Image (cartoon, rainbow, N blue to C red):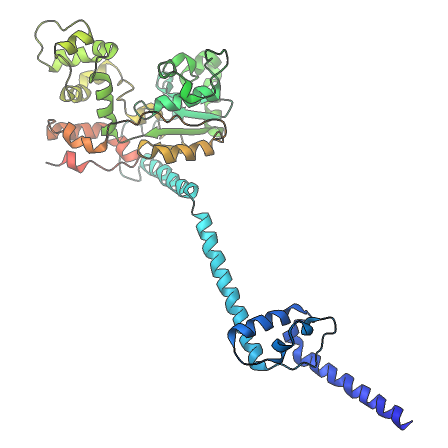
Length: 410
């Protein structure tokens, strides 16, 4: 009986001792989770050279027997827990850096740039920049149909593109032809590759559906349909430095024989400002052979002549962008710059969700550079330059091109 009684007392005391051990080690074992002991073992070996029974026992400590009688030093436990916390913080910082790097992509940079470009137009059109120009406050409904002839509509992909001559418009028209399938190739099927579309054909206005044609197609419903499409379609345009665009237009239309432009514009410039006596050569080819052709100064003088404005609106190649695309009346979703054509094009095709359908034509790069401005304007009087800037000032302001101080200052 005495032996049995002693065993019972030993069992009770042993149970109490086990309970006390559980209470003491509860935080370290994490509610009987066996894995922390493995972590403590590894971290203790890295942080301290002090010996630890927990480390020496190895995986036996994590077996199903769960030997709580194995002692451990409190200092080792604290060091291990501190190392674990430090490692967790380092991992968190590393993840944060990776998240930031992942977020800063060319696409997000492009999005921010687009927001800045769009906000600038909003500020200028609202008068926030203290800049005023004709037609700034005109309602879209007041714009005549003939002035909406540059807004090409693709109903299939819900896109509206306002093309600006001398700003990669040939290649963008090719893209619109492929998307709308409005031109049949020699194979008898619509073109699928923009680069294969002949450049001379894309400038045929009959193959593009524009807002100017809506009256003929939809009659009294035209304005309502335009409003609906403007609200729901993705609208974009491309622009460039206004003075560089002028130089490009002059080089393209008057720097080499062009019968149409010689007959309609070149001959007028030569008669009015060229001091040409007698009759002019009948054709552009004959005029160029005789050395008779408009100069850049005569071209600028023609643009600033009030008589020119009274005769008709500017030709599209030198008409201001704000009069071609009406950015104060149309809230564009994307404003591309020719100066950043490659990156803007990639961004836009993704935005339009057509990047898997086609590639933007590589084409020849426009060779008119901004660095040429000073040379081209060298013979233009300073007062004339400033008048020209007033004429194209809205485009400079709207699209964020800096005032060309090197040209406007003496």
